Structures are given as C-alpha cells and as structure tokens.
Length: 200
Image (cartoon, rainbow, N blue to C red):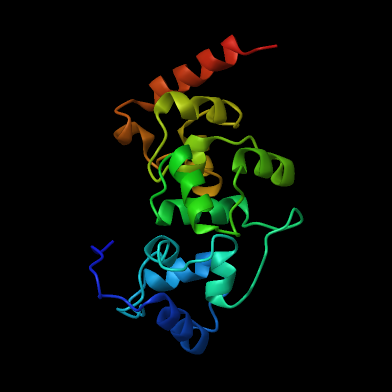
C-alpha cells in the first residue's frame, strides 16, 4: 500500500463525486478493494477511504453505503459471501489472524463478510470452522492435516494421488512429502496412529 501524503488524493467530496459518476458499477466493499488493487485504479483515490477520510467527514455509520451511493444497511437476514469466497478474500488481502479480520470488517464496514465467521459458516454451511484454515494463505502444519486425512479413504500412494487431484483443499500441499520432509510411509503411520487414538 503506498504511503499517503497530504494533497495526494481527492478530498472526500471530490472522491465521492468521482465514484458516483465514474464507478457506478461498484456496489460493495469487496468490489471497491478489487478495483483499488487493480491497474484501473484512479491515482487520486485512496486505498481505504474509510480510514483516510476518518477525520474529514467520513460518516460514522454506514459510511461505505453512503460513499458508494448504495445507502445499504446491513441486517440480520443479510447473506454473506460463501465460506470459500470469504477465504479467498482474506487470502487476497493478507488478513492473517482473527484480530486483523475483525478489525478489518469493523473499520471498513464490510457488509459481505460476517463479523463472526466461526459462528456463521458452521450454521449456514455445516462446516467445522478453523481460523487457521479460514485465513491461512500458506499450508497447515503436518499435525493439523492428519485428522482430515484420517477421514479419507487413502490406503496407498495411488489413493493419495487420487485424493490430491480430486478433493485436496488448498491448505494441504500437493506434495506433502517434499514440503514436510517425510515419506509416504511416515505419513500413513501418522494417520494410522491418529485413527487408533481416536477410535470410539
């Protein structure tokens, strides 16, 4: 993100006027950040107007709706991004931990993202939520992928290749043997041990 210098960007009124005239297709905060991160960005528009104009007239409530001209107000029936879309959003904008996520959503009034994804997505999509998996742009530790692999029908290397090609999530490397420095047999031993310890 570039360093902000006095006089570099439009004042709030001019920025809002430009958005209303030239960026009518931008209706959500997600669309704004996609635009402002692209090569189509106008050089006099700040990356984060909610933060940049905070002391110069940015509305305390529903500021984004006012700025983008949607006047949208979030409500309890609001449909948010799907889990995968929200995950991709967090990865794209390098939101790395729970505190940064909640701060980002609150300060920018991002209506597309739930403030409490750990409650929203298990309820709406029936998933087991993990902040590490939700935010992580990198791979999980080997100990963290074992429980998931234990639930898969992987009996040999061919089974692993099929799983990796068809069902492997992004937080598990395609070649864990190189990434974690283990052999396939060592991985299977860890999976078998986990299964034994968690048998009902």
